Image (tube, rainbow, N blue to C red):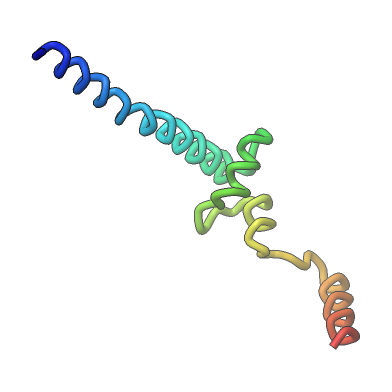
Length: 91
């Protein structure tokens, strides 16, 4: 009787730890993607997907993260003016 209770408790403890291991791996993948972004940009499609899903850290100075946040949306003055005219025409 005592062995079966101990076996059930041990199995329950293993089951409680299993999802944590999977989420910890994805957490480290996300942090790896963010480190790549801080270094200049995502280096794989998986990094890009993780950054699109969970976002970059604030203050990350990469073109990819700026594009995601909407910063630097209009690169030059002509594009900005053209977009402003389009908005005025539609109002």
